[in-house]
Amino acid sequence: MTSEVVIDAQQKDISIALLEDKQLVEYQNEPREASFSVGNIYVAKVKKLMPGLNACFVDLGYERDAFLHYLDLGSQFSSYQKYLKQVESDRKKLYPFDKASHLPDIEKDGSIQNVVQVGQDVLVQVVKEPISTKGPRLTGELSFAGRYLVLMPFSDKVSVSAKIKKGEERARLKQLIHSIKPKNCGVIVRTVAEGRRVAELDAELKLLTKRWQDAILKVQKTQKRPQLIFEEEGRAVALIRDLFNPSYESIFVNNEEVMEQVKNYVSLIAPEKAGIVKLYTGKVPIFDNFNVTKQIKSSFGKTVNYKHGAYLIIEHTEALHVVDVNSGNRTREKGQEANALDVNLGAADELARQLRLRDMGGIIVVDFIDMNLAEDRQLLYERMCKNMQKDRAKHNILPLSKFGLMQITRQRVRPAMDVKVEENCPTCFGTGKIKSSILFTDQLERKIDRLVNKIGVKKFDLYVHPYVAAFINRGFISMKRRWQFKYGFGVHVYPSQKLAFLQYEFYDKDKNFIDMQEEIETKN
Image 1 (cartoon, rainbow, N blue to C red):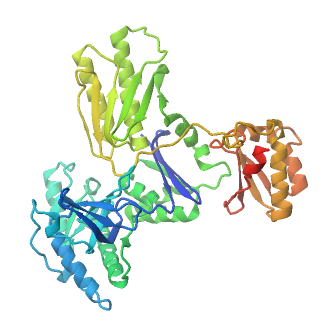
Image 2 (image 1 turned 180 degrees about the vertical axis):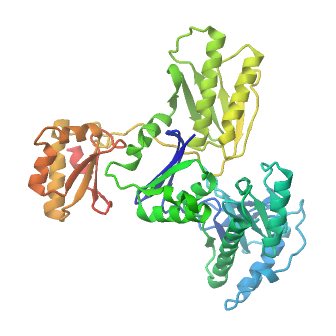
Image 3 (image 1 turned 45 degrees about the vertical axis):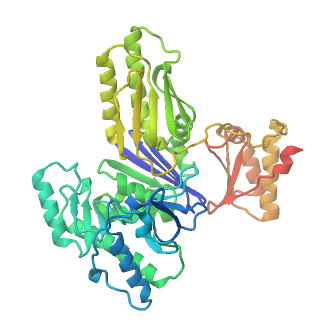
């Protein structure tokens, strides 16, 4: 199996697609100015105690206060609080972390009001992003994740991933980490560290330690509260950190700055693979070039088609996701039981992909087609478990119930990806009336004339629907060629699959979006 990563970095957001054998299996889209990300660390203020919930609400500067439960404070909460006061008490000289004292662990069954007061400063880390009406979920047990290791201040434990099975390798890694880890820190060894040399692990441990030191330095230098003191790497680098494996053939990025970030990180964790990070310079949108746009359009939405006419219906409620399996117009040549098994196995394959693709979390209930044979139901359960082995998120799958329902729980740390595949009319803005479509190219020419002669932008790219682009580019003396003779050869027209039929977008030579849409002219 070959894997490729395609990164589309735009002005306002960044989209990342992971392709396995050219098939889209993971998709992330995030605004560039996103204020929250799992892993961010803050110095924040306790705003309100909730003894009934044994929790408190914390002000992170977000519209909804974040939630911190007593059980999420971490056993070393008292040590963190003492060190935080020592750091805040001297703004000129930083109190050394290796001299920080360990206080006794807080009680496991204690009460929130005994350890936290309103207005108190606390060091917290985001473990779950705001979802629906809920604010972020926090922990007081800080961690800094790397490719091979996770650094945990104020913990002395060295833990090795349970997925590393060989006893001698587990012992080697434990002994190695004990010999190089800094004082007052614990370390979790991740699965990908198996077989790694001491130099690689030591280099990453030093990098993670520096991140913790830089975060504490921010606490000392700034008095503003709440204050972001450590920001998780950008989505592009974070995804590569978690997913990177030797089977990657290439990582394509259409933005030079993001490409350098990704290349620097790949050079750090796998120097021999730095060459697979490449800058995409084509004029066709990067997702169109790698057939990602079409897969997004066909993979999201309420109805998802898969093999031989069968399809899934995916509904999302506040509490859970519900998936219904339908055979559609499939022919039943093999008999009802064999056909039901075939449709269900195909559904299991597609559903496992959809869970990763949409990052669906919480409770998922799947209504498969009823099967009478117990061995067929067991086969379906085993197929689903096998398909979910590739999923990084923690999950649990139950066998089919007597009603033919399969229940799945999957870790949820951010809202499920929801891409609207239905296209609203871009030209009428919901009024139901537009100018004659035959006059659309005249409208585009007026925009070009205004852009060139009034605004003074001589070089730009115009993106339109592929059908419209074919119309503009057709013939020996095409409409595009006539525009170039009239307005200069800086006029370029390209197709874009993400645009609706009469939608258009202008970009200048630096790929900055130019807003030429005038709502009023479509309502005449």
